[in-house]
Amino acid sequence: MRWWVPFWGVIFLLAFVVKGVAMKIWSPEIPDEGQIPKKYVMRAAGGKNLSPPLKWEGVPAQAKSLILVCVDTHPVARNWMHWIVIDIPPSVMELPEGASGNKMPAGAKELVNSYGFKGYGGPQPPPGTGPHPYHFILYALDVETVTLPERPSFAEVERYLSGHILEKASFVGYYER
Image (cartoon, rainbow, N blue to C red):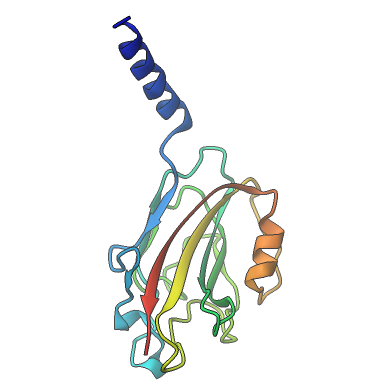
């Protein structure tokens, strides 16, 4: 019966290799479930409104494009869209600090956020409303290009993506004033 142990170990390893590493997104500057540094918040809230550096791995080989969203899901914010980037080539594995409006990958397109301008709009929660969760979500899609309104709501993004998501990864950072 001892031969079953190595047999199942090999089966597990093969399943892992065939499936690959699960997609993951993170920021070297924002710990998951941690505090967002002030330089990434809006100027009116005392920050520099720099888009944070982001990295990801495990994009499925069959992905044709990626979408990045940053959304505040606090009840006061009601899914306030801070950043929407569509048509990111699946070969891209990171965005450097301050990429929004400056160093975006070829083909990627930033849409209009809930503030009303294109690109990244950092946290600026109303004072006294407690910590707000900012979800950075990366979607791997089976389509090369995405057609969304220029200023989509989170519901519109999720509605469009329905049926096109190969994999999804996220992390959350918090900020309060």
